[in-house]
Length: 85
Image 1 (cartoon, one colour):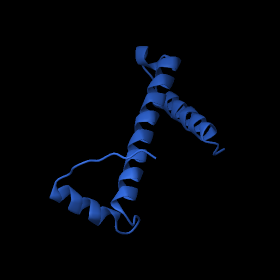
Image 2: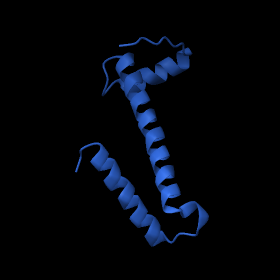
Image 3: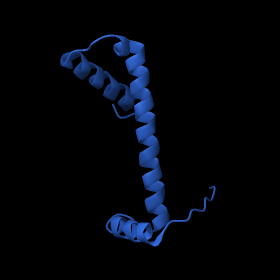
Image 4: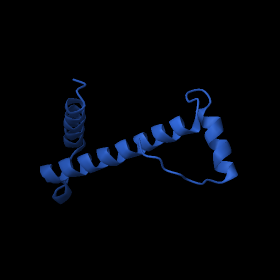
C-alpha cells in the first residue's frame, strides 16, 4: 500500500469525525471510502459521456424515452463490467 500525507484544517477534521462515527472507525477508512466514491463518480461520468458520444446524442435532439433507454443501457453495461448481473 502507498502512503499519502494530507493536511486539513481543524474544521474539516471535525466534520470528518462527525461524518465517520457510525460507519468508520478511523479517518483513514473514511478518506479511503470517500476517494473510492469520487473515483467511481468520475469513471461513471466518463462512461456516460463515451456512451453518449457513441450513440451520437450530442449532435441530435433526444426524447425523454430515448434518454431512458440509454440510461438503462448504461446501467446494464456497468452491472456487466462489475459482475453484478
